[in-house]
View 1 (cartoon, rainbow, N blue to C red):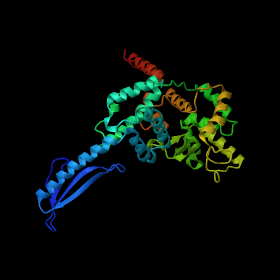
View 2 (cartoon, rainbow, N blue to C red):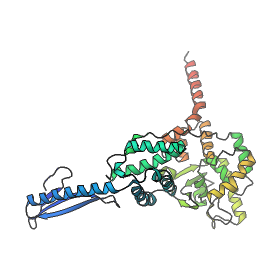
View 3 (cartoon, helix red, strand yellow):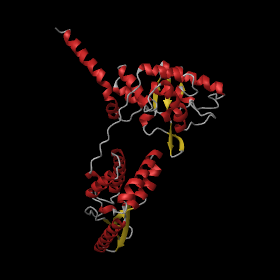
View 4 (tube, helix red, strand yellow):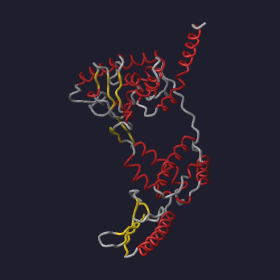
Amino acid sequence: MTKRAKNEGSIFQRKSDGRWVGRIQIGVDATTGRKKTKTVYATTETEVLGKLTALRMQAGKSLDFERQKDTLSAFLAWWLENEVEPNRAMNTYRVYETETRLRIVPLIGPMKLQAITGMDIVRWMASMTRKKNSNDMRKRALRTLRVAMNRAVKMRIIDHNPCDAVDMPKVPKREVVPLEPNQCKDLIEECKTDRLGDAMVLAAMTGLRKGEILALEWSAVNIAERILSVRRTIEEVTGHFGTKEPKSASGRRVVMLDQIACDALQRRLDKAKAEGFDPSEVPLVFPNTVGRLHRPSNFLRFVWHPIREAVGIPKDFRFHDLRHTQASLLIAAGVSMKVVQERLGHADYALTANTYSHLLQGAQADAAEKLDNLFAKCT
């Protein structure tokens, strides 16, 4: 085989009949993203080289034409249908589709994909500001377009991502105020009498997400051994909901239970049997009134909100903040951040550290005091 320069194709002579063969890449399949190749034949090496040169020139013109006629709207429609919907979670698809439909296509959708520059992205962001879009909205829209454009770069449709010219808008982080231990006690007492109230106790004492709790089955719980396994979660999107596996390997985890969590599960087991929902017939730990998956939005409306109000917890305290409460209780008890990460099922240690570092102020003061005591013994 004759070695050629990059993008010039390859040439070799077949032993069977002595004919010369040339192969060259002429583009990328728009559907699969795979390379498209063309093979030519000739009686001499010079002849096959000429055919490859002609193919390369023709392919270049054809590819340039396809790039020039494709609009951003056309590419985004293809990307959502073929890349996002089949391969991403329903919530991810919903976010990308919404941002594309409301904030990207109406403003810059008709532009030629290959012609978009960093200045066009800057103007697009400025136009959203003039339309009174919040920084959070602008950030979601830019993130969506950046992901789509990165895919276009990998497919060699464009040479670079113009979104890289713009910094992400800064969005102030929502300050989470976790429940104090005495508030947790009040919550636990209120939850004891409610049919599904023990779900809140489990959230505060294990850090499980709402979807993980509502998808929990008795086969994943061992009260005697004080452990439960997180295997599934519930996802609800635009009125539709169902179960799926956690999105990361760290999400599939085993959680050790303290006595309060064990008591909550035992109470729920007793309630289930009294309802006629024996675990052998109804596998879900926290089912709806007919023994099936509880719709997450209904659970919040009819279970969490009334209990929150009865305990006197502020309305801006979300169910998800019970997860933050678990983290704060662990850190206050001196548990390492690595263990907190594993217990909450975070894939990245940095995410745990960045989210809960503000809770370490007390630990920092305690560490300084211990250092003082250590050196005091040396004098």
